[in-house]
Image (cartoon, rainbow, N blue to C red; front, side, top):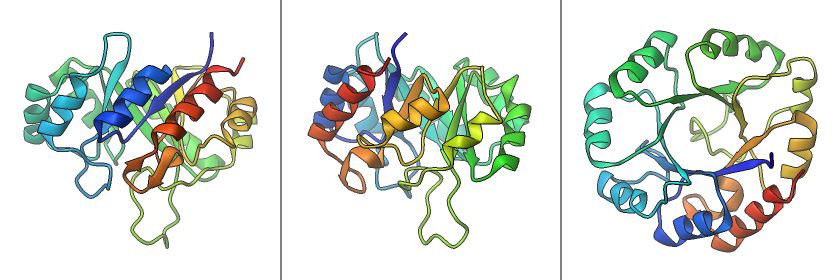
Length: 216
């Protein structure tokens, strides 16, 4: 099975077309207003309508409340919910039960000790997303999409066999090494295919997907 790719933070039709045409398995829409990649509900509905059944539509949420989540889901078809905040295990379960949708929980990694947080989510989340933890002194840090990577060699002592995806600072130049070191079968990119924060490069999306899909 070849490595799958997710293009996250899509907020324009051209970027969505590039992701779909390039062979992305997942496309991500960000519902977190502070992010430069955030989309309105109307924008998301139009973008979601472009996606064929062969591609999973992922909605990224950060500590979202029920009213906001329900309003978005009533107007935007999504296949997978990505929870990228500080959601508790109880909150993850509640969202799964209320929406009937699978959930991917993001875990922020800086050191080996951060892997302990994964265990409590492993039995309830349908997928785990490994992302880099932003330094405490990083100005204007976002929950994700900060163009930061973490030490991939940590996977040598903490191999993860369940359904998971690698994120954090990936780009055309390092994704091959990241997959080789971690053994990831799914990768997630956002800032690594951008011209500037929130502005995707269609050519970079194309090259990233070509690189990933060529991996063994």
